[in-house]
Length: 142
Image (cartoon, rainbow, N blue to C red; front, side):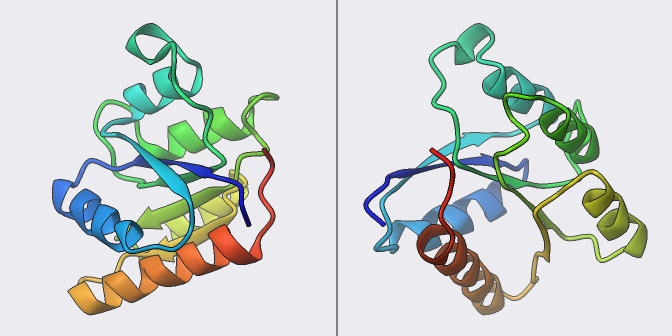
């Protein structure tokens, strides 16, 4: 795939952000990673409001559920209820293994739900697997 994939990472944990950046940096896939650290910023980014008026629309979104200001579930609901945004694949990337969180995410039309491993090597493998699937196997909308 020659397309440059714009990824929006919505994550408040700086350690997780750094790990994801490191794994993606070693990627052969062309991508741009854009990062926001709370749910309100995510919505402003996606709606191109305020300081995000020049934001690049993502082809893929990584979304943590437990975010400050606006919960990831609320962000997901807004994305999937918007005519303009609903076709963007959203990967829930959360430390929660709770069945209610998994079910609620799929009820809100998440494209997949991935539990963050606590082990660094496993975390890296999961990000590489996600990257391999979503950036080379899947054809994303432009």
